[in-house]
Amino acid sequence: MQARRPLQNLLVALVVLIPVTGLAQTATTPEGQRILEHVRILSSDEYAGRAPGTDGIEKAATYLERTFTSTGLKPMGTKGYRYPFTMTTAAALGPKNSVNFDVVVERPGVPLEMTKPTKISWKLGVDYQPYAWTESRSVSGPVVFAGYGLSVKDKNYDDYANIDVKGAVVIVLRGLPKWAEKDDAFTQHGALRAKATLAREKGAVAVCFVNEQGDSSDVLARFGLDRLGAHSGIVAVQVRRTPCARIFPPKETSMFVAEAAINREKKPASFALTRTTATVSTDVVLQESETSNIVGMVEGTDPALKGQYLVIGAHYDHLGMGDENSLAASREPDVHHGADDNASGTSAVLELAARFAKNPARRSVLFMGFSGEEKGLLGSKAWVSTPTVPLSDVVSMINLDMVGRLKDNKVNVQGYGTSSKWPAIVDSAKAYAGLTVSTTADGLGPSDHSSFFSKDIPVLFFFTGLHSDYHRPSDTWDKINADGTAAVVAMAERAARDIANADDRPDFIKPEPSKTQSGSIALKVSLGVIPDYSDDPNGLKITGVRAGSAAEKAGLQGDDVITKIDAMAIKNIYDLMASLGTYKPQDTAKVVVLRGGKEVTLTVTFAGK
Image (cartoon, rainbow, N blue to C red):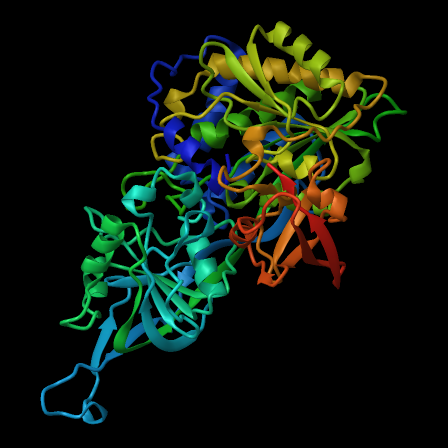
């Protein structure tokens, strides 16, 4: 399953710490044994975590192809079973990374104009390293300490209030002051990308993030892609605390003193470093790789209905040896086996494909293994953008992601509100499988069904819950509840057959989002766009808008690229959140979008949360 959006991270962090024990279970049925064997193979060390662009995922793709072939599925990719597409799979540091300072230290009896500056350089990978979302360029300017890099109008707190950072390199503390950590008004501003956006909008050319005091003050964070947008519009690096402290001129305010003052007095303590300039050069190379969805079909038996398609899919990619989404305690490379996430869902699809091949339905059924899900649902987005069957003929999509840890016979079904047909179908299926079901109406979520929902296709998403092994190397095949997974497969099959055999195709409903899905708890307004999350160099691409939202009323559409809200440039989801934080309900703003290559300006009236 794809890592959660920034606003869901806290919930995930809490959930994944809950220990899950006693889930491992010997398969007692033939179907459970088949499913477990698929999981065991896909999550083995040989497949090395199935990261796109690696030999491991190629082996997994070949395994899916062989299984589809032996099952008798018709190839429905663009190259046999394969549906290849290109995606950004990694970020690497180029040769032009450097950070250098000139500090003019006053010396008794020596005129300042004759004083040679002291040269200080940070060592790449030791003292500092760029973020993968930095703009790759070289910038120079005076150096300014901007405290925690916050501007929270509601609390009358602004680290930029009495300093000029136009053309400057700013040093910003990570996190929040201790007294603000539990204040909702501050929390939305505490993310690194939110601070980077603010620094950019204030005119800074670069931002250097330094850790607060503590055990991790001299630890550099894991380098890796940010799925929510590589384009930040500013040069950005992280630096260890010790080398950063050394650039503050002696006999003047130190970083330690300024930080202590902020935490003690609850007031900004920003200042320009006297006679200190910096040149920061960053060079990050994004690596592109080809990977493939695997697509096969069981043709329908009804001549009048076989031209309609039910999609049953699951992503088969995972985190490889551990990428930026890993929750492992160690930063050392280690196989992230991804048994539950999502060898379990992939194995369920393989089992369902075999069952439908033996007993076809009236409608045709497309079985899909998606790649690139962990990097932003890229495989499913690629397919719905250029499908191998007319998208108008896809009647619905069933997604299986993390279905291998059934506990207490409970399964969650999302997308429940995306068709009026679903309550009866889900009730019948859960009774058939003997499962207890909780439901979520919305068709959005951090998995591949979202790509189909965004194209106005009704969806159902089966999910057995998070656990302490999520996105860790410990997500191994021996912890899979094989018989429980078989029960989920039985329920999914019953629902799928009801859909594929019905006289009428299911209608589509775009449900109103629940209050818990609205976004940051600190925002006062809602726009109601569905971000694409894949990089677009022009701005923030959206896949759609929510029913009844401010965006829908203003005329925003799926595939629009938002480039500006009033005077603020929008390059990514963080910029959008920062912009929304400046408005209150019933405020209006000009939203500039690119639509079909042409610039369109719309007026939006923001709705309250």
